Image (tube, rainbow, N blue to C red; front, side, top):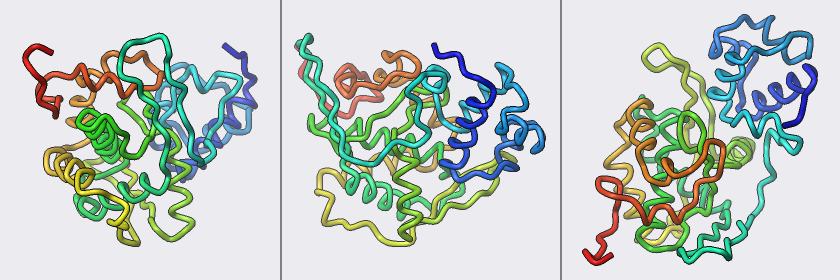
Length: 263
């Protein structure tokens, strides 16, 4: 693990905060310290305690191992990426390729249907995207958006989503607002244009609609707890990418596919 200076830690925290579209005041409130204290951390003039780093990882959505690594990036570039297939396994091979346009349209479609619900903050939205992607893969053995999800302490998080969302905000497709839900800070997204439904097949829309119907009224705690019992999550180490192949080991109520008794 790389030994970072206080200045490097502060710089990384500032980059992550900006990638999330958060002010110093908002982040400080979320991790329960004063804004001047956070400013001193970002300037490298104050150290970060283990507990503060835990709170920061939860709010900003990073794994501590990744944060402390030498190749850390606060915001990944947005381009199609192919995950190398594992040639030493007889499992079905998962090679997700991020389809940025598809990801944007799935996100817009979910928000069209759900953005008006008070529980649909960033945490719930990430879980809805996760179940759309993994349910579709379990059913059709094909990728919906091709997003890669990491196992973080509060649930699966789609990688590069911050960069894509910032691009959509700059392009006038989304608006980001900060609010509170039951006394807790909440980040919400409002769609400013409709999804291009020509980019979504009937099968894809059916899977998305089923996830929305089942889970879009759940609050952040309920949907997070539910995701923590899903086999792909359970079988993945903290901070690692979640393999789509693990969807084939699901059991009810998570499995969306009917398997033969022999299998």
